[in-house]
Length: 348
Length: 235
Image (cartoon, rainbow over all chains, first blue to last red; front, side, top):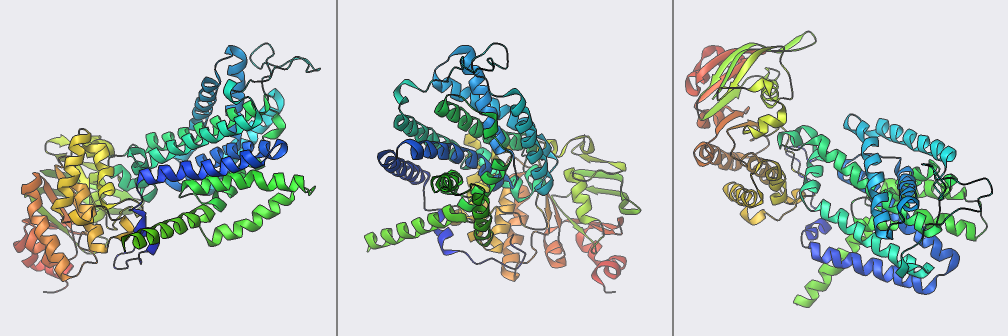
């Protein structure tokens, strides 16, 4: 915050930030995600394709986490649990009605959105460490609950369980046009792009401006007529929606979900991934999300204990502490500089 | 018009405002006093951020204290804070648009009001500059522009001239005197710059230890020996 009489120097790159139009940003999102996804689809198969599909689900979870932290300064450590909620709701809905996949996706998103909003209620009174701890405990509560009730697999009743043999388990079907692994990966990439657009649209319009005021100073935001509770709840709902969509996509990937796949620690890993990637730009969430899945997958592939991943993430946090912009933020700055240089050369 | 009657605020054993009676009727009113006199507390009570234990405030015949802070905004109350609070990541225009989003009647009138306010404070050619690219004077102007949105009835400004140099204060002074007629608003101004208060405010309230020390035409108040001794530090 600038103090009276002390004006902070203007960083070179931020002078260029206003010249990047929303249209250019939209093109960049499509190009970057499109090219990376194309390369992955052409070069990966089996194990890695599955992991990159999961990585894109992580991207959505990180995107929601970055929305809360970057826009409102709120630390939420229950994002992976909300992915689980989205998965549970989408599986429950799928086995009840057998709707088209897009509808299942939306229902999963809305379900986690509602739960996310309810879980976000403490945020109306809490910030910082206390909010982090409360959300972490909620993630722990979900882990305990889902271990007991498990995910629906097409059985009778509300919980949708089948007998101990498990022979009657029904898998959730993927969209007809994306039934292959590669097709489904590209489908998930497309949904990821749409979700990034959704967040960017919020950041550039009324809710984004309201969030910016709240983050700057709540009293000032109230004096500007902002409904603090409403906009905070909106942010939690949107963050939950993104996690819920991720959960539904995971359910589509595997056909069913396992309670043991939603440990509390993953919510912390997601937060670390967000810090590593950077929370101010979409690219940060994209790279952070991919890293959170890529590193454990690489360790498994190399036959290294996956707990080593925590050491890697811990060490990488030192980088994040030194550079709050994160990898995505730094790459965005580099891209803007190159763009300006290119424009200057073209003009001359 | 703001009418304050026996307003008392108490924090523990301290009374930042103690049975204060005052009436702001002029288009531009000053509020001065030494540090800790209760000036900002009074603004916080008017905004709804601090609740008094006793007293009433009438804003154009409406009992202000019964309304929430947000409702007071919709009634036409605007304010700035001691520290400028421009959002660095938003442009000058977006900073002003952020309040128009919530107080303007619709999108079209919001855009029109934002354009008018930005031009009024002289930031027309800096409208697309990010908050962090603005200097202190420009940031103060953004803060002022924010208060001019949505047909303000009363604008409370807490030290708008803090940190400004002489020429910037002169530009600020010229804008302040134009606000009541241009926006049909009443202005209540806190500032430590007695010259700014003297040249802008028609009537002034002087606070000392939460009590009214003097109130009346600004020149007469500033020449009052009691005020000179307590606030200006000279006989």
